[in-house]
Structures are given as structure tokens and as C-alpha cells.
Image (cartoon, rainbow, N blue to C red; front, side, top):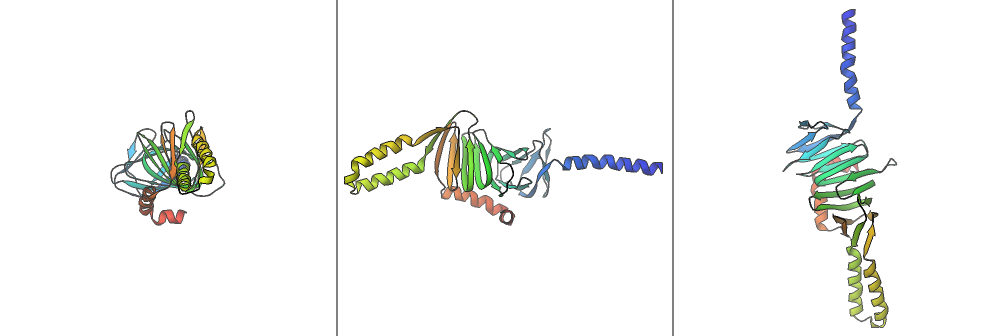
Length: 247
């Protein structure tokens, strides 16, 4: 009887840490290929397996040349990590995009706003799909669906909206084609819109089908183009049905 009691106590001591650690699990790798590693908050590095669980406690996923990974998280999001990229998990509602190209897809829910932090900005998300590319020069975010709030960690952004300039160019072309009776009014309109073309804000909302590039405090916004779509296509193709079923 004493031996049996000791055995049960030992079993409990083994299982309690396992259940404690399981409570911290934040997501799991559902697909990967090539050179992918996971580093924990103590600097220990391991190779992943499919269904490898990722913990909240500051774990980081790294890919090298040829490496990719799909991770499904408990906060209602899925990430597709491209090659030579790095994603950190700070807490259930906060990712750190450290470098490279990553597709983020967030399911619609009524929970707290989830965030992605880079050196250049903090992106607040509810339901959306976007790709972030981070390098030493800065960040580029291409937004396919939904809406993202963009906040500067230091001071105001200097926001340049390219699509407004394109509208002005079209307006000028129309003027040159013969709308001369509105010339003076049109020139006044152009002067006003050019003055408003640059905005200074610490935060702003980005709508779907737009892309921003952040270099220091300068933000350049333009419409989503074919190059942006190619970045989505490559990562979505790797995720395949995993991403389609998630959406």
C-alpha cells in the first residue's frame, strides 16, 4: 500500500508541471518545411515537429533560406511565416514581427484587439488579412481584407497618400483636355489638395486594398498592386487548405 501511495504521489508530481505548461500553450505548428527553429525565453533552441506547441512565454519562431511554417494560434489567428523570417510571441494578444515576410490572418470575433508590433509601428487588428515585410530599412504592410489601426511608437507619422496624388493627376489631365471654363476654380482645388496631401498623425486607420511603407517616421500609402498580390499568393499557396478552412 505504501509503495502504491508513493507511486501515485510521483505520478501527480510528473503530471502537474505538464498540465501547468499546457495552460501556457498559445498555438501550434500545423505545417512546416525546411530550416525552422523555435527558441524559448531561456535561449534554448529546438527543431519543430508538426503539432509542436508554442508557448506564450516569449518563444520565437525563426526560418532560414527555404524554410516556411504555418502556425495556428488560440487567439483566433493564423500566421504563414516566409523564409528568412522571425516571429515572436509576447502574449496571447501580441505578436512581435522581428524580420522577414509573414502573412497574418485574423478570424472575426468579439474579443480584445490583437496586435502586431514591429520596430516602426504597432498594428491593431480585429478581422483582417495582411502581409508584413520587415527589414533594416523599415516595414511594408499590404492589407488585403479588413482594417488595421497603425500607431507610431515615437511621435507623429508623416503620411504621404499616393492615391490622392493620382486623383490629382487625373484631374489635371481633364483640365488640359478642355475644361477651361473651370480653370481658375480647378487650380485653387489642386493647390488645396496638394497642401493636404501630407498628414501628420501619431495613429491612423488603413483600409483594405492598400499598402503602406514605413521608413522612420515617413509613411507612404498606395493601392495594393500585383507585386503585393504575389506575396499573398506565395504564402497562401504554401498554407493551402489550412488557411482556406481557417477563413
